[in-house]
Length: 503
Image (cartoon, rainbow, N blue to C red; front, side, top):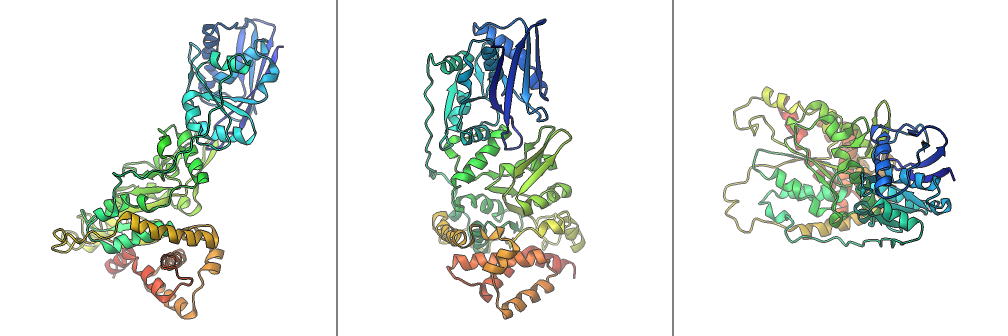
């Protein structure tokens, strides 16, 4: 047999399109050619595969070898095609029966001695392979991580020789069993009761957690803004299976360390304010996910918000609305999910506080204008976090509720939302707002009057209604009332500050 077909998968965003690897052995001068839009790392597979075959005591054909990676217009990169190319050569030279390969997909980079090395993007590949009812042959490290997938068929290979003996039926490698890992609460987790005072901010944090609303903390240094943001994660519900798999797939293709023990925990990303736009949204000649995608189904915390470059912040405007980011490059286009919850913190003045007398109104406005209006328009809750009153630190009864007690209300409210419209309130579209958030005529007039007074946009008008809907859910109330709207309007600290400074 001088021809063989082997299956593998490429990596495009978090998708894993099928790649059919065709190997043809023909007469002619010795040559080893790989076609099908391979990048440098794939073309270099010629030397890795040749050495791996020879050092594993296989016969390497001294003829013309042509390897076609189909489809031809799909870019291929990385060392993931080493193992399937080697298996294809062994099959085309008659060392492996051809019929044995139909049920397998192969992935793995080969060392020169024939050992298998881990690849990037094992989760999307294993998921796609499972849907097509094939057995995925992966390097051992990748296979163990991929066992979190339900209904998977995985084989963990340690070397080319190890995989060869399995495929020909000489020494069968048992299929790996799915790992069932229950979420565990660490006793060292930070607690909401650690934050002294700041009851309004804690209330806003509860609302944000329940409805998945974006949140801004506004206050002088040392008032607990970062502490509050870090405690949001403990209030959020655990990831569902679908959410966890999607989040794991993003971390898999990014090449970031993946902790299988905490794979159902929501991600919390906190990039430094020197981060570039590409670092936040992703990019590269081969597009890779950025911070907003790594925070998918979790929290993106931006501390010292005005210190970020204005253009960097503005690249977040589209994904904050759509929940995804499309990265286009000359050779490739990739789309990554980016449904993150934004938590931001800032000082209201370049000096720390706008009332300390060290900066006038124009200087404060110049500082705050580093954040564009359209970006601020996408934040649902704007909370003032003031300095603690005298005696607050000495008051031992000033701690407030624990994370566990607040989370109970959050979960109940989230359950009400999902039962009603299968989505958190922050993600309601206009049609769903009309259906599930009706207002009486008097309440409509009340809300519009305040919107006009603060010169707020229609987007903000809808966000206030969504926040009011979340407040009603936290109180197990079926309809939005004037009290809910009034509370939602009270969480517009930044708008009120800008209004005062521009008078």
